[in-house]
Image (cartoon, rainbow, N blue to C red):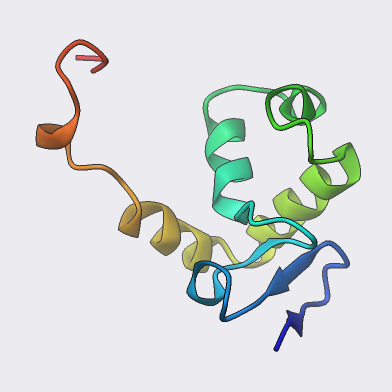
Length: 93
């Protein structure tokens, strides 16, 4: 069962990423948009990198993050790849 939120483009569905907030109609989690934004990519350019997402969806994800930072930060931390599992050729160190 899809759970709507007060954010029109953000939903939770237990069958998609165990209920993590995603963009409606996609499997793209809010955290993916937030992590892209944190890399320094402007909201207007995120749809260039995620072409199935609209600018309105990007701004709604940012708004959701503003309201639920601790929740999204937990998802980000829980999905972080441990440094020892990252190939040394692609690390930023």
